[in-house]
Structures are given as C-alpha cells and as structure tokens.
Image (cartoon, rainbow, N blue to C red; front, side, top):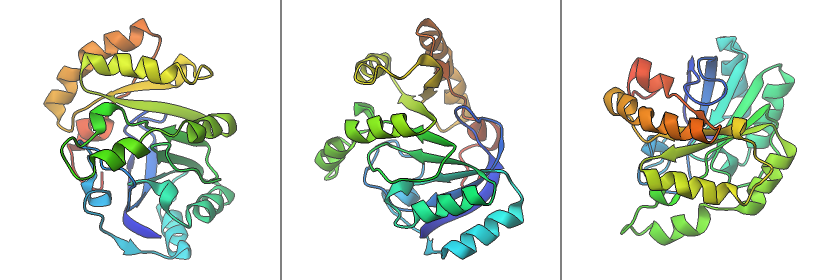
Length: 225
C-alpha cells in the first residue's frame, strides 16, 4: 500500500473522539477538496509503498486497540480489504474514514463517512468538474449504511451548508440524528472555537451532534498528530 504516514495520537473527531488511536494514512484520493487538510495525500500525494506485514508489525508495536485507516481515500488502496481484515483478526477495533465514493468490502467496527458538500469543490480549478462528478455516490452510501455501523461527518463553513446537509440526508431516511456530526471548517484553534458556537446551536435544533477537532485543539494543525 502507498502510505503517507503511520502515527499514534488520539482520535480527534466523531464518536471515538479522545480515544487513543493508531492512524494508518493511505496516500491518494479521487477528490480534490478545496479545503483539504491533508494535501499531501490528495493534491500532492506523497508516501512510500509498504507491505502489509510491515504495517501489521508496526501496529502491534504500538499496542493500541483502536486503529484508524484513513487518507486521502483509503478505499482506493488495493490492499485495504486484507489490511482491515488482518487488523480486525488481530483484535483491533478498526475505523475506516472515507468520503463514501468508493466501495470495498472492508472489515471495520465503524465506517466514518464524510460526504463532500458543494463547499468542497475547487471552483475554477482543472479538477472542478471531476470533483463534482465524483463526490456523491448514493449507491455506495446505501451499501455502507446497510452493512456497517457508521457515522456521518459534514464539514460546515456557512449557514447555507446546513440546508445542503438537510437536502442530502433526505435521500437517506434511515440515518438517525445520533449518527450525524457537524464539523467546523477550521484548521486553527481560534477559528475552530469561534465557528463551533453557531454550529452547536444548529446541531442541537436538529438533534444532531457537533464534532470536536481535538487534535487541532491540542496540537494545532500539525502533521502526525
């Protein structure tokens, strides 16, 4: 697998926020979000080819139950199915983080789906059309929500994004509010705190959740944390 980094930290977002976690970050993505906070896995993919045995050996050295397979878009990785299967067989609780645009039969205790709203589109860039054509795959979302425990994380920048989330969720009536997390678009502590206030109110009105970004709060926007 083409891997950008492997590191131990805490899960900063969603249901398992605050849980000590090992992150295996695959490099490569089929989207180009304008606000991507890991451009070294999408806009300018970097990393190295790692054998599965090497990744599994490193995971065991950290002695960490929760493993997050992330990206980029890890569902693009040819060996993500055997990787997640072997991690699960070794006793790890696996979360896979995906935009929900690519489908593979991974082994995961939680599929964390981050659908890309129109605020993600790199308007005016050569990637604009490809990104918009790829960012919404209802067939993939229906399969993932049918076969896995899951959560949704939506990156919210402006109030109109809330309306778009409601329109999006209308296509998936099976999704209950406890699985829906709003996450402020911010990669610095100050803006993160400022933007969380009105999003919290919007989430509470709809019986949704507000996701923290604990890794930003504690470490800043620092790679490998």
